[in-house]
Image 1 (cartoon, one colour):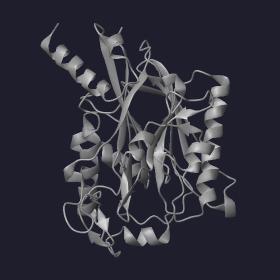
Image 2 (tube, rainbow, N blue to C red; image 1 turned 135 degrees about the vertical axis):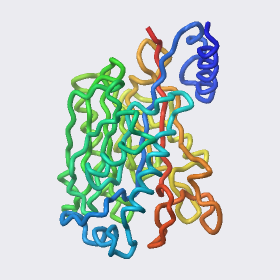
Image 3 (cartoon, helix red, strand yellow; image 1 turned 30 degrees about the horizontal axis):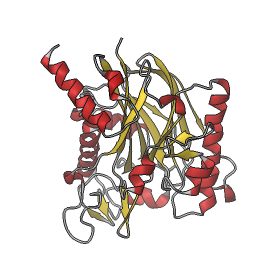
Image 4 (cartoon, rainbow, N blue to C red; image 1 turned 180 degrees about the vertical axis):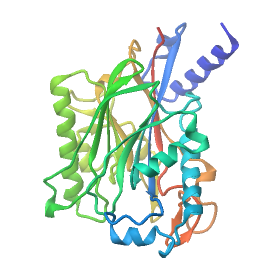
Length: 350
């Protein structure tokens, strides 16, 4: 056995030891393929061009003449910072980075094209799935994928049309294709903010769960990974009741989905901070077909929050918080108000 492969297996065991879903004994003597899936809220990735379809306040803010004095230099600092983070996600087990990435808070396809063209991401050849949404802030969700890992067969969006007061929010973005030869569905969403009424998130949760159920009605064993900024924690009613997501592996019911972020939240971990408390809005929720230790096909290994010292505020009142691009109208040259999340899947390499 080659030295590099031995090191690879040892690293794999170290990762799996942190989560007991896959039985390590089942992996001994087997070649294992690992893939990574990620999600990142990019926090207001806007270009500098005035877009008449964008919310007036943000249109004024993210222009050279606006209060943030948003210009080309700052835009490319933001792009390079986002590319730096995305380039490092999951590389402890997947040197080429995540096979697919869900993102939120992007203005348009153009900023995504600029992002994947930055030097730290360019050689990964990420492709884009993006649709303009009716969101009043002018921000959308999107999906990036490496075509040598994920072969996209179709994508679609559905907008929740029954929101109270005819509120407009981001579209739910769905993809279907082959991940390393296996059929997979990916869904990306960004739920309404906490500045609005609670029923908005409940309504979107009901809608998205209906979409998942419609897929499962046709394909009961479908592998579906739902990801996004839910603006709610894993223990909130929208996630527990309306998405029917749980973190209890041993007591999971047939109609439930699994949310690996529940345990992390209960242990005090989060992806964003507010009033000296951590929230974990950035989540993965997936079908039970990804659970178990039969690794003849992809199974879930574990999930992580990507939080590095260089991504955090180093001093002051908000020390330890995510280091943002702006605080108010002051340019901080940081990253996002959210930390990204990523997970690993493993299967036997045939």
